[in-house]
Image 1 (cartoon, rainbow, N blue to C red):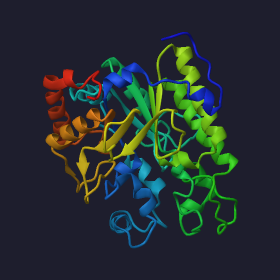
Image 2 (cartoon, rainbow, N blue to C red):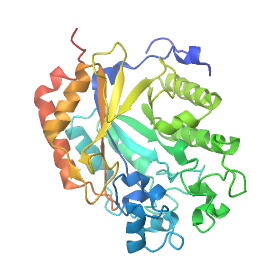
Image 3 (cartoon, one colour):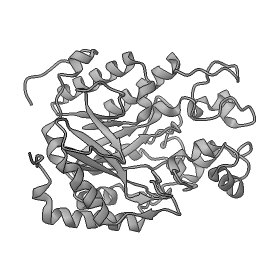
Length: 368
């Protein structure tokens, strides 16, 4: 690294941060959606099960009523004990990622449901206190680094604001006792709707990110669309903190984001299941999934989902690299901690292709 930089929580200062060479060389990573929502494994979008299970007429609600009972009697929190991860083997997962040709990998550390997959002191709703009773993020961080890969984490918890129906008193989501999972209530009156997160929520959002940064020193952070709801003050403070930590750790770090949630020149923009239509002058990344479900992706393990062929995955990868992009592929482990065989096959086939053709991918630059 060059001489140590110090970043202030201003956009002008944060724009001085440069995309690491390792990411430009790596091109390819793997992440995974795995959590309490993996228990029902019901799509089309598995990770949105907690949202739809409370909405009558939805596929997820029908599934929930049939298998667990009315959500007014058996809420999302009641699925947590069923999330056992009893067959979870982090070393096997990390070896699979390495064999697939990935150069960076890691978990969705927390999704819209706000269940933390690590040993958290910020929220009691975490995978060490309940469910698996294991620090799944910490175990994967060690296993991934042991394989020589960079470690990434993805944050989706900004969308927890309004994710659950807190204005419906018949559900556990409206009970203040469970606000740590279902989210900070708008103001204590059921019918008042606040569009933008309040200070309590914003502080919680920031504390979650800072805790993961401090505990696991990620090389790469990915933010989902909810980042657009976070006040600029908080975004700038967190980014400055992370970039300065990278300097302190003497390693190059980077952040990924979606839509226009950060100004151009800060981080790398992500096009979910998308791409640029031509070679760009800027770096970008696309995230997609090995699965296909109802014409889209399940973003987690869905019993009914199919799997894309390795030919499609490779074609999409080549297209993105040729246009100055990178690719991160999602898989959906089962709630017991096993990775579906079809997901494994797709990744290994991709790894086989990269073993032969990798020199045309890793470290490459777009043709001009």
